[in-house]
Length: 326
Image (cartoon, rainbow, N blue to C red; front, side):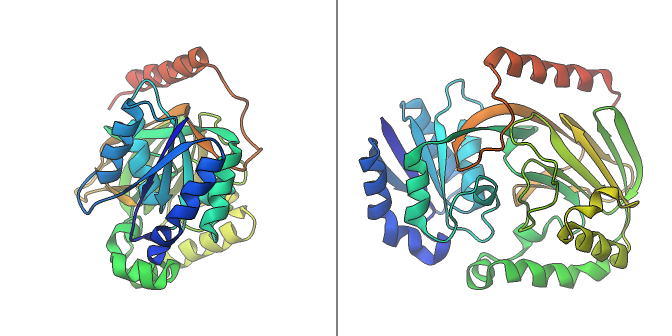
């Protein structure tokens, strides 16, 4: 078996470079012929290497870095027919995906040991146009925080940098007229932002949706039907208080296999995919159920489905989209 570690050398205050020999040794002891690739300061470096490794028959690709590195690796292999298993060594700012899969986030070598144990978790992958995402898609105010915070501030201050930027932007929140279609429903009105969530760990919050079941083929859709700063802070407080925001009158919550979003006014509705700019609405988001196997430490997973069931579920969501008017 062969493993390729694709790592961001600037992640984790360069801890990856310092621990790489130990990480490779753990994988070698687990029976892998292991090698490493340091991403370069050029577009799609991790994605291109992941695609090359997949086409060359590597069994395992390890995304070592932050959530952005995980997203890049997934985008490199998601549209291939034969996709290798993905492991994660978290060394970013929030490491949401690693948290969702219960991978150690404070010890890189311990994370490598989880990969060596090889517990496979079949995970859903989201798609918007030609881009894929693994954890969250969002649009509206505040959803641009992750790509507005300079990388140096992320490295120096971590999650505090996001909080500071969010507090700075709160007074400027304005409602936007959005049209959002989803399984069995439609929202057409004023809202400040929407979130399409795939795990129970997003932006450092671990209770955004207490009902999430990994691999069930469903997004968790949230629409904040308010731009009032005090109501938004109240909703955030409800999130921290055990998921009580699900019943808040200014929150639309639904489980859906697809989401179709458009703006009904002159304001651009910018999209965020796993923390990076994902273009502007209109956009359609589709869930590919159990599309890629990850290695994690999670037992609460939806029953694994076969390839034919996955194909039928995907075709049903596409058929439903075709029946909707734009």
